[in-house]
Structure formats: structure tokens, C-alpha cells
Amino acid sequence: NAGVTQTPKFRILKIGQSMTLQCTQDMNHNYMYWYRQDPGMGLKLIYYSVGAGITDKGEVPNGYNVSRSTTEDFPLRLELAAPSQTSVYFCASSSLGQGGYGYTFGSGTRLTVV
Amino acid sequence: TQLLEQSPQFLSIQEGENLTVYCNSSSVFSSLQWYRQEPGEGPVLLVTVVTGGEVKKLKRLTFQFGDARKDSSLHITAAQPGDTGLYLCAGGDSGGSNYKLTFGKGTLLTVNP
Image (cartoon, each protein chain N blue to C red):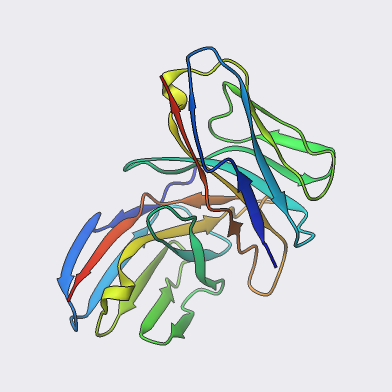
């Protein structure tokens, strides 16, 4: 199984440019999440989804948008890139299993805004 | 807002030593998970504990959930270089959104041969 697949792996954007980070999971998980990870700051939740057609803001949603048209896909959109959005972005998915909602993460997208 | 404090932030030890890392909060969590993250990769789930006082073992790793479900510890016996990585704890929301996790900032462990 592929699990959670993120593309691209690396990207450099200029200030003001837009891009979409892609995330696909093949585990039929209802729950999907976008996090950003900055050095020494841990993982911060940007947006999450509890199922197709349902999304909600996390802790740091400003400057980002998401959509969830299918169970499998959960793209993250940056409309006007800013240097503060330089980070490593992780997509994750989960479902209720024994012991709770263990997350499966993708391998991340390293984004630099210059 | 639920917060998780991890300590120590950095730990560098020699192969064969034992170590314990801690995850503390003033909040109650529905569950507590531990992840290990290697450079250039996403975190990988090691274990989930859900019951206060619960202890789980995964080979040389022992995980404990505090009785009040506010804290957890990870103990590694006879550490090996392959244990090197960033260890993250994450707590499940104790309200109705227990699928949402709050992550600590992590403990960066280096095990030297």
C-alpha cells in the first residue's frame, strides 16, 4: 500500500506566487490533516477534514485553503506565498482503530518562499 | 488550548545507554501517541496508550501513560544508533474531537556508536 502520498517533495516559490500541495491516501480514511513543521516548533495544524465535503480550520489557517471533494484527496492551496510560509508541510490521515486515531503521515513537502 | 511539553529537547548518548524522555501537560487527553521522525521523512506512529496507568512495550521501548492521563514517558533500554531520530508525543483531544492531535515540540535523540 502507498499510504499517504504528497507531491511535490521540494518547491521554491517567489513571493506572491500560488501553488497547490497535493495529498492522496489509499487507506479509505475519513480524517485528513495538513500540518506545518518549523524547526523547534513542533507540528502545527493548518486545516483538517472529517470526510468528503467537510473541512475546518486548525491552529494556523491564515494564508491557506483546502478542499475535500473525494475521500482520497486533500489538496492544500497557497494563494499569495509569503516568506513566513517557508516550512515543511505534512499531510496525514487517520481512522478510528483500536486505541484511537493513529495518524499515517506523508513524507512531506519542503517549501521555500523567496 | 491543550499544550504538551517534551523534555529534554535534545539528548545525545552512547550506544548501550538507557534513557527516558518525558511528555507533560496540565490537560487531560483521551489518548497519548508517540511518533518517531527521521530526517526528510514524516513521523511514524510507534504506539498509542489510552488508559491511565497503561504501560506498553515495543522491543526495547517502554511507554507509560500517567494515571491522570496528563503525561507520558518513553524509556529506551540499551539504545542503538538506529534509535536516532526526533521523538514526538501527541495527545488526543479530550472533548468531542478526539481525532485531533496536539503535538509536543519533540525530543531529538542522537545515539552515538
